[in-house]
Length: 152
Image (tube, rainbow, N blue to C red; front, side):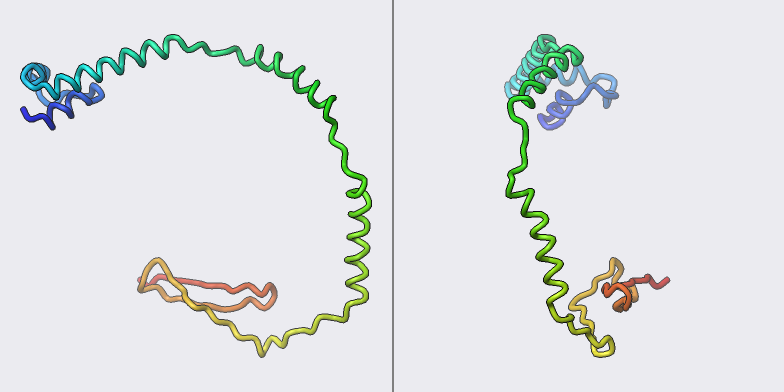
């Protein structure tokens, strides 16, 4: 047995064994190969450490944790009330009045002659190189619309 095959079997997740005597072959190879023996030992150590660490993890009670956190959040909200600056209270109506005055006092924006409009698409790519593409501008919305249809 080669090291690559032995490594694959050592790292396997315990699925269906590739052959009936694969465990004996791996054991014989590991006994003769120091690299594979080290890999098997490191893997066993890693799994043992993982099992020990996960056994020590305490999962907190979510309701008890929330009951401890809720009063702290309420205290924080009472100590730091959010107040809008007085400038903000006056700036919003002033901005609205300025926008209204701009619309009333500004001359009308010149309209664009739709027949003089030109549309240009630098590049259109469809998923299929044999697809037929169509590009146009919707007069109501002004959107550039690209249609691509595949030929059969």
